[in-house]
Length: 170
Image 1 (tube, one colour):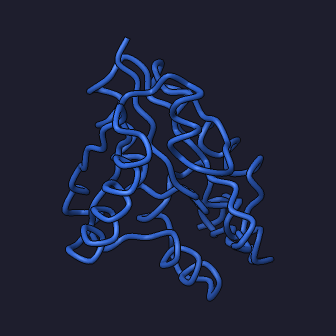
Image 2 (tube, helix red, strand yellow):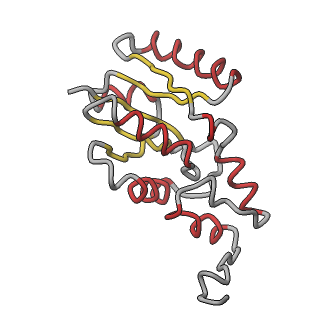
Image 3 (cartoon, one colour):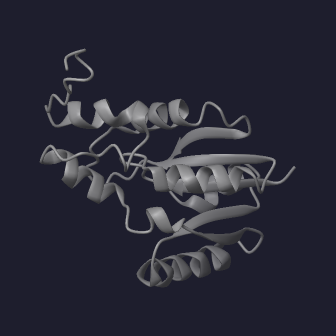
């Protein structure tokens, strides 16, 4: 069975992440989306919340499993007998960082390969940081995140984004 891990913080999951998840799932028998619990960062959402969001937005992809992890990615990959790490690339700046990480992982775990998927052009600018900044100021994030989580992001900032359409008004 070909297994891969797509790791990230997913704080929150974006349409760009979902694009990489769908495309990666088509390449392997099983894709584990690894939600990083990074104690050095202060995420908007807890690990459990991010796992639950990802489970909701990937429920239609049968070969995807959502798991959280902390520590080294290669240790997590070995624990789940994964041969491939998937990373998405948006720009040249991503490549430099991701190349260094993949080379380090290759030295630490020579049996695990990293593959890079170019982000679809329509999401090449998109990051979780951009989504958070837009949401913080009440901007429209509907083109950036799956519909199922829009309200969760706004709720986290205490913003009520019920439109007149949603209230049934014209």
